[in-house]
Picture 1 (cartoon, helix red, strand yellow):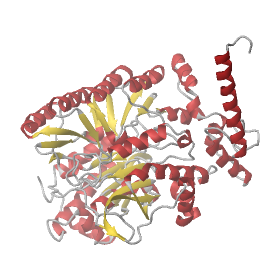
Picture 2 (tube, rainbow, N blue to C red):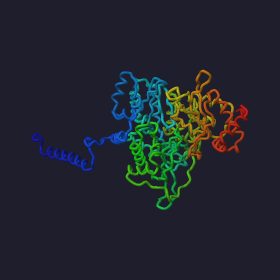
Picture 3 (cartoon, rainbow, N blue to C red):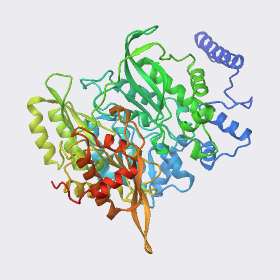
Picture 4 (spheres, one colour):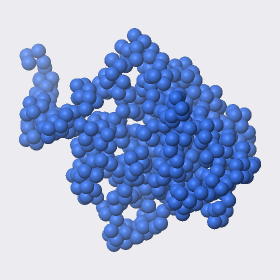
Length: 593
């Protein structure tokens, strides 16, 4: 150290001593930064330890786990850049791994990428919407779809522009990191958060905190399968939290032994309606400030105990089924570092119900003199021009805030009373509107075979044709939700629709045509209709589907107990055979508009 002066020598000695002290502390605590003990170390230790246990128990890692183990997908950025420069799409296992960066190669449906974003609570600004419209024009197909996770995805991105689109997204202060594959998907929350007269809690800070917790905790990207988290603040618009792996539901606690009055969140776990399970209430009550860390503990328990040898049994539901609810909660508490507060003894007020179609129309905010406008989007799709128009309207007549919903539409908030009329007119000039029939207000459809290789039918196209047919023949005057999903992944959640349609191939003579299995009577807890839909008909070719549903809806309108009886209630008080009998008796075009 002869080349250093005394002050430099003193600093360097202290610096080296600090390093040695940290190494000694690591050894005393059983940690190793080098992994020389054989125990997985580093940011991916949780994933590797789970994989090791699976193999030690005699299991065989699935191909996807082997690929993730070889090198973490988030460490493959240079490969994305190289492929873009070569104008090449990923092949084999790289298709899955590229989804960690938000790019989905969707061939053979489309020989292009789809990019799905992360938009916490589904809320973005006008300038971000405009920027996405420009990026969709420059690098994609010139349109975007609102998803059933209050998110946006852009399609028809060529191989050479995949990275360009990701960079454009990041330039807007957004990200696509971890939006697909075995990751936590977009964090959903109440779309009317902060403006809803009936809400118990503003979910925006929670969704934002959860979003950044995921982005800044590498172990959140070491899961065996996809994972969904939702926060419901008890507002007017349903979030479908009971369909998520973790659902947080705001609850008013009025008191009780050991409970301070205030707003808590019920913790629900294990929802996956495509596998016929709603999230169950754990009887745990959390203060808002506890939710994010508890969610992190749940995810780590899932990562540690999820199945790495069978992807069909790798979701959280199956971990809980295998371990038992109490045992899994004990693992969560171990990860959290404390016991979770049980609801025993709490005086919890009944849940305030949402409006089934509260996402459409003009609604007053809790801020006096202001309104939010729910815009109908045809099965979630917007052109880039419409995106720019919505951005301009929200900036000119609102606060520049755009709120996406799980119902594949969006809200413009903070519109003054005096500006509602001109705002509605401007929306109409875009070819959109704030009003629609009861059938079209609750129409939900996944991408379908026009853009997804798994889908068995053109769900978006069929949804619009179905709505045209039914609107011309029936006056349905109560809210009804019709969900069309293209495959068993159930992205459109057909089991929770009043009418749920899952695509199938139907044999007709020597040819095969697109069709659907039909389910009825599903619903969600937020509107007091939680139920899995029952099968009503199977293997119905699409050209036979509209008349079949016309007769069923005509039977409902003719035989409901009162004008206020919902289609859900009507279906639940009849068995399927009785419903068929009533539908067969209904004359075609019974109630012509």
